[in-house]
Image (cartoon, one colour):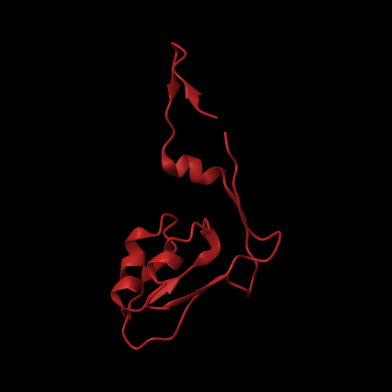
Length: 104
């Protein structure tokens, strides 16, 4: 729900505020996204650090791309971006786990 100004106009919410409304049930020990083994991160993997809308990808101190799927929105951006390279394994979470969107 949007906040209202004194004159009754709706104040737009920031994306962070909207994402905060979503709920996640983590399936501990069974991530639905995994990065396949690699010697050097591909351009597609490095790109995921910037394009994942939930910010699930990061580059660690060793220069490796890692994924933390706990806040994943299951949008499939990473799946589409790495479709040709096959850099990730992506499956929908088991029933009852993953993201639960709250609209409004």
